[in-house]
Amino acid sequence: MPKRNFYRENPRFYVAVDCIIFGFHKGTLNLLLLKRNFEPSKGKWSLMGGFVQKDESVDNAAKRVLKELTGLDNVYMEQVGVFGEIERDPGERVISIAYYALINVDDYDRELVDRYNASWTDINNLPKLIFDHMEMVDKARSRMKQKASYKPIGFNLLPKLFTLTQLQTLYEAIYGESMDKRNFRKRVAEMEFIEMTDEIDKTGSKRGARLYRMNNDIYRKTRKFKI
Amino acid sequence: MPKRNFYRENPRFYVAVDCIIFGFHKGTLNLLLLKRNFEPSKGKWSLMGGFVQKDESVDNAAKRVLKELTGLDNVYMEQVGVFGEIERDPGERVISIAYYALINVDDYDRELVDRYNASWTDINNLPKLIFDHMEMVDKARSRMKQKASYKPIGFNLLPKLFTLTQLQTLYEAIYGESMDKRNFRKRVAEMEFIEMTDEIDKTGSKRGARLYRMNNDIYRKTRKFKI
DNA sequence: TCAAAAGTGTTAAGTTTACACCCATGA
DNA sequence: TCATGGGTGTAAACTTAACACTTTTGA
Image (cartoon, rainbow over all chains, first blue to last red):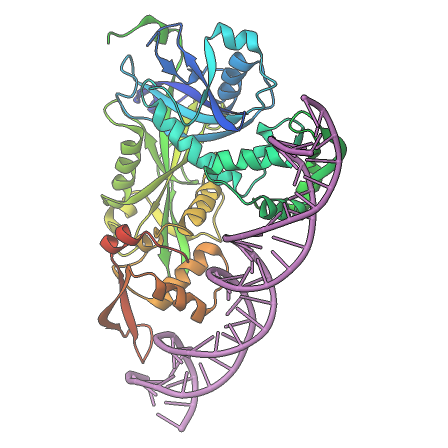
């Protein structure tokens, strides 16, 4: 189909993506935030972001931007929504699309993260963020919490092998409330895709704790998840 | 803050909004679709859409576009998400943001709707839609269903006064499954904000059915909703 | 008088919550 | 030997689901 005139009557906009990058570290949820060593708003805290380019879809722009900071591919990401107020970026009108990403904090590329002057920040103790980035964080957080309750996305925040205590602590951090250990383990036992391995983690206790693993094939068959 | 150079290195895009307009009519959910009497894709079925302009936020563009078709203000709308594939519109690259709207089918402006060649279509029997509009519909539908289960948004699809049978039929249409009448009414009785009026509707039956009304003030106090 | 929709409670099944002690180990 | 985190079962409370008959009235 040829280009048509009627598109031309309309304005065009810069379109950006911003990433809310979740990590789980020492029992708390963290976000990977930039203390910006570049303009605009140099010196202030912000999310990692970037402009959508001509040769990429919006989703791919988000993946690219995430990879730029973390070096990671194949990361679990979800679109949070569009932030399209006229004056949201005081420099120019930019329409931005927020995405959240769940990564295992052991995996990211420290060199890249240093280059961007990024650091992990406890989600319950965030600094002031530029523009409407805090609003993006709030929305991402509640979407993630919501989704984590019915899909096994939390496992993206854990290492491949994890103890049940780690899993419970993670969900306590996501939900912001503590849970009963026995009830938690009862529910885990009902989910076949959370497989016990024969490995033991000795780093967290003297006795050692059994390591578990998420089996995606079994999950796809059973689709049963409830924590 | 002055305009800055670094924005200029980036491309700009047409940004559109598309509206998934839900109505409830004769026991089924309907969408207000256009049989396009304008280019592009003249003659094909599509959602109502339009381009974001310079002087409006994205949310306001959606409201404007909805009003253009229906004449309605103050309509319940939710953002569904961004559709940003490179080739989604074969004419030009357009990034589109989908919104769903819930309207009472008694209220819309028939003249405007005629002018756009729009009509209500049973959601379970939709025609082929242009571009990725069907994907937008699917996503809107599942989001709406999800939200309707924990927020009283369904009332936007009903007249101010409604019978419990209408309410139940609405939720059966939203969830796509039938419900037990007694259990349904038990749940309704527990929600104080669904107020009985002293009016009777005689159009649906000989005996007549009690009319109810949603009281938003009470809802805001109690925040209790579960159907 | 009868067809058609409105209205009304109870019980069983299932789910969720609360709760406390023993185990294994390294320091 | 003891401090530390790992691991385990049961009963009560609550929620959800299943189920059928009577009422009213206009045609």
